[in-house]
Length: 198
Image (cartoon, rainbow, N blue to C red):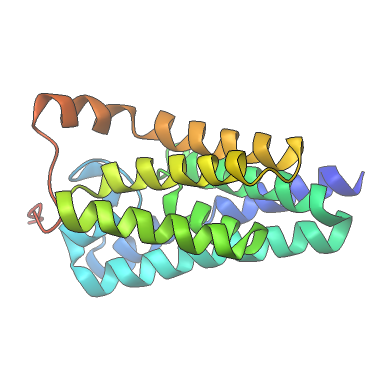
């Protein structure tokens, strides 16, 4: 019962979408109607600028940290893993926004920083390096999640932690499926390219 409670709480926390709320507050717009249509930090940066995007990013990371911490408090490591997946699902498919949210990368970062801080830091560094070299945030996000999975495979702890990493990677890839198509077609926007809002 506590596991169910932890999952529900985590999902609802994930559903509080900072990109949507901040874009509504600053510009009175729905960020999902502009740019990539994604309610996340990268799209906010293209529309509202770096400061707003950093704020969104930090809030999304915080969601992951809070949800996993609650899950761990309620029912240990299993609760933490389940809550980590649930909060990302809540961010991606929020009940409050007709199940149209973000891509879950910042929230995933908050999750894995609590689940395995060292692997989280390594994965973040890998993602930053890819973004710095290619200027593609989507590619860095995908490869960062893949790197987290590989770390869990190489430094095996348990099947449950590996399964958790696999699910997190699959969620990231699934949410970036349109980005992957654009990467192959050469139409993906690079870091720093903006979308104008009237």
